[in-house]
Image 1 (spheres, helix red, strand yellow):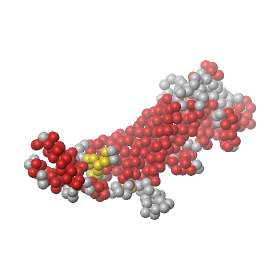
Image 2: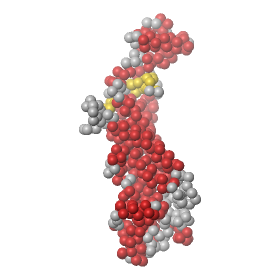
Image 3: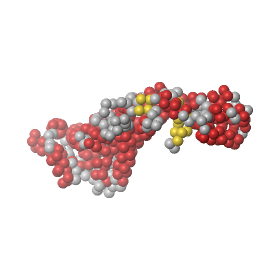
Image 4: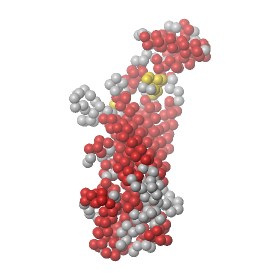
Length: 460
């Protein structure tokens, strides 16, 4: 296992997005191609079954194959060569039908589509875990008051449930967007040498439709299997927009996880101490300071979110491709896209584990709020005074009171209750009610309910 992968991805995703996995899916393409061509009447059925059997059983030296791939600029060449030799050993006649009418990009892109199907099934499952954990936090803490923070400064009160509801909504939205782009992005590739399937004559379009249907049925990601083919699947050798949309949505998912991680790591700061990653033996320890408990899962997630945009930029830059086959643009995808997927999986897995076992200190949230002695409630207090004394005067009175709170030991309630200008319009009981954060949450509960409803509507 590569150390960088161990840091940044999930144990489940690393083998799924490995080079070995891509080769396995490329062989599945070759087997399915032969079977589709047999169904179309292009290839003898016995030859197709021999090819499929050889593809399933093929043994090869992966390192030697990679060395040969460097010479040809594509791993498809040595892979097809090895498969052809294996089929020839069984039937020289059948060997003529290996990779029949296809080109290197057909097998690599179609193998990638199957590989991404497995990867997206894992990403979808972890997005669901994140949404479910965030939903539970939203329900459990709908009435847990805490400081809202804007531009890293104290703002008006919110509840921790609302913060979790925002995480929930982001995860639900991201999963829905992923599922929408799949129908266009996870489409098999079959165009032959220059995207015409000219070597198959009149059988090209029919073979492409059969191949599309068969490969879609093999895809591990359910939304890809449900995709409906409208007409003949046009080759997308240098038309990479759908794949870029999918890559962009995967990158956005990583950003969603990064936002959650940033929030939690900020709340884990010693001076804040409002929420903590779950305790795990050995995780978060410092090599020098025994007292430290580092937010390691959050750290790795934020790192993934910071690395991903540059990788996505590589993919988008590579869209400017030449004519019918790219020189460099397509090849630039080979390293960047797997990294984007692996980073996303690591980020989601870390946040699913974190949210599922998050330690929430509701008492500390309230203490941090109360430490500001009522100052986060100045807007509510000024608005309550405005009908009786005018907006300008009310805001001026409250601003003066806030300065007295900031420079002394009294709370905002004590200062306001001692101000005749304020008590002419508000009773002490009314002042206490206004300064209670739980009385000033506005549409918080409605927003939480809406986020929870969106999760229910999204289903499994």
